[in-house]
Length: 451
Image (cartoon, rainbow, N blue to C red):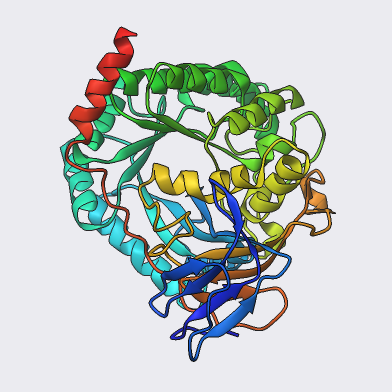
């Protein structure tokens, strides 16, 4: 099996991108990029051939929101699990300065991840998480955008920072050409409700569901979008789990505001009405009642919710079975309940599992695309893979389709049928969006406000 340093020809499959499907071959160069695409390509001397007959060939999955954490043992265990599930690139949430400076925190994170995935795993990049805003944080934001390949910051709208701090982060990020990703599931309302529930002896998943009810999420997402809109800034929001949140995103996009959003697969297929308990079931946002599912699927099908994310790592265990369903089941859940159910096309599937995330965080077409010069990250997918239960401890969500091979950087990094030698994952620099972002977006926001 291909082990790097050679060219690899993937032939005989049906290539699926976010735009179209067609029968072509893909030649992966020895530099890790796609060297050629076309029908019936000749086999170069010394080139390995990977037979994709009967399979779909798609860009490797891009997970735009993971929280695996800094523990190297955990990373080393979970990165191959992600790869085997079809994800080749993750954008991990990296904790804030903690007294050492944002750039130092990023350097520690990058060193740990690079060491943990040296034997094989996913490519990786970072969102820097911000929990406060002051002059030191502002300087740190400038440093990591200029020197570390970071172009996004995650923060909570309604957490410990007040609105002036949140808007300060959004404003400064846009001046740097970076994007803010906001969640809105906490806040003062949720904290007040949670305190009352704690006093009543109600905790864990039930308390999360009651304190972060659907109206709390919907109003929080709307508020986050409003604050970004007042500054004329693009914004990423989510995870999204309610009709109210979808309505807020749709209204903003119809006004012309630049809003991207993510949804976790578990919110598409599981509900909070049963008694099932699984790792992470008390995470935010909580599982909702099944009545929210139709709005989320509609948001995906219409393009208002552009991407799927895992949003999590695993519980205390390290085996694949211990992972939350979003982490290991992201592809299979979307394929079974989306494509096979007739809600999504195969092209939609590619958009939601790779292309849209790559676009939103400015690594497209390096990631999320199949074209000459793109990274040779490919998922060879059996669309007819049998439906099966992901795990009995997850409320029995059903997945289908199957990962047969995963190519990362032109190397067969995972195969369900043969042994392979995978190279280590690499850090992915994400360039900022350009010096003209702020004035250009503000002009567009001004025009939208006049409409």
